Length: 220
Image (cartoon, rainbow, N blue to C red; front, side, top):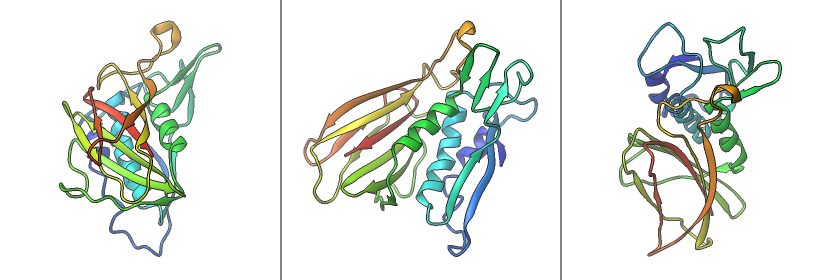
């Protein structure tokens, strides 16, 4: 599955209506063009491109009863041999470039539950610019949120049942939507991961995105 950014951003509900008796593996995927562009390929994923991939991955996670796995293409490339195509990691003889896609997958894989949880929204299933997926392990719940080119997006999250009134928030962001990560000698990484806490007020956790492109995971 190789697509431009717009194509990946349209795949949030890609797996919703698949045959539930047939397992699916996304054997190879990558966002290789920015926005609606075609060739030539881009050499490093922007934050926006990584989030577009993430929208597809949220859809896969919501349908993890049938989507059994995903694999990025390519995982690793030598920087000087493949300067104009994407990879999760690129390297030279003595430096490593971890892409924006690398950090998105790191956050997605680190904060996930063993079973999916239904989400009810007053706006329906995913509404541009916000997309989500919820899972849980035991009493711990994980709500992933992607803000995709949204300005000042705010979400009020209400958990049913017993839960802590203080939740952890893991935020993945970059300087802007067009930011890319570079080799250390060329400027280094633009992405950052920050963990903070948030306190429930009036029965809801209010999650605010200050940047137009970013990921937040609410753990409660």
